[in-house]
Image (tube, rainbow, N blue to C red; front, side, top):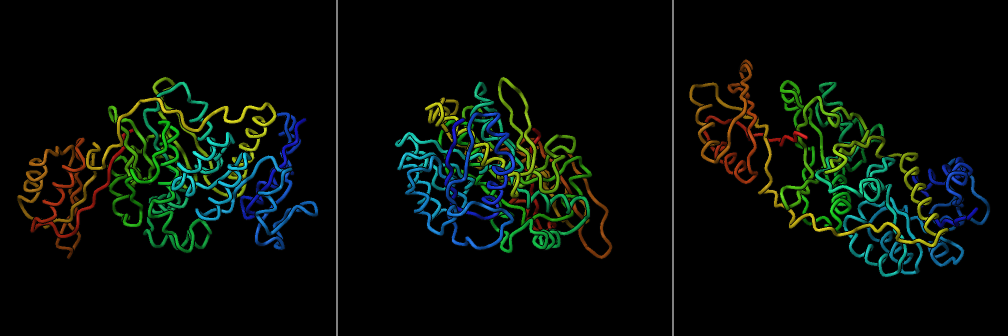
Length: 432
């Protein structure tokens, strides 16, 4: 039996979960893998707070150096979050030749190139299963389970806060602000929820998935990012009537010889598997050229789900150490399946368009003409009954596939019509 000494930096919710998991299932892990990860040191600024878990005397310290400089420690686990001190911790451990396990998606998304270069230079492992979709083993699936496939597309519901908000808006007819306030009260949303609802958390995870799928570190620069802050309840209602559900998606896909990497709300067919994912759950829908369509589903955050992923990485690292096979599965293996990242102007999609217009003749004809002049073909039109005293009626159009730049050009022209009484609402459609 090989004992792996773990140095843990960050003893918050996830760190506590890791300690609990190892204490609870250490014998199971040892029986299955032939290694036993053991917490050797824990560094945190607060070592007095009761976390509901007990560790042996001498394990706790307030100094990260007590972990980073301890020659007995085999692997460093970074769970402090952020992109400054955490970066220092990870780079120091890697430069010392020690493998690192992290759950830090923001760190990887913004500084992955530097971190993976340090890992390659030292020959040390870096594992990060918990950085995307919590307890769902999507990193391992892309690195190993789907290694025989060219990845055709990835569509991910990657933020539980946003999915919770959209689920309650749809199911209970509640406005965005009302559900957000409730999510904050329940602890599903932060006091400052911008990272989640403006799409940045999903973007961090999407950047990681894109790089795994195509063997190169892309970072954040190529991503188009939109959140859900602007979404209105009426669009969820109209979309459902048309056979769609609204989700915030991280999207990675091949488009010919190029790659699309984007984050935005999208309409999904109501009978699709991904559309059925509700509340705080996450899911990642992956299509490979050999395996076909697969979906990975589970809790994307929380103490236990995230700790499960961290401990799974510890097992992998421990096996690599036991059999002297560090970097046995490298993070990125360029394989020449693409030429460039597609500009958002050049993506091709179908679109949902809602317009608030004067209830008078020839309005629809004028709209159709402007769309047609830009090469936009209309698939369906729905006009709602006028609301008493409103002076305008909603028209909902579904288009055939069109280039984004052409659609936005048409939208700008439509918005200038005298009969259009409010800013148009556009949502992209993903047909999966």
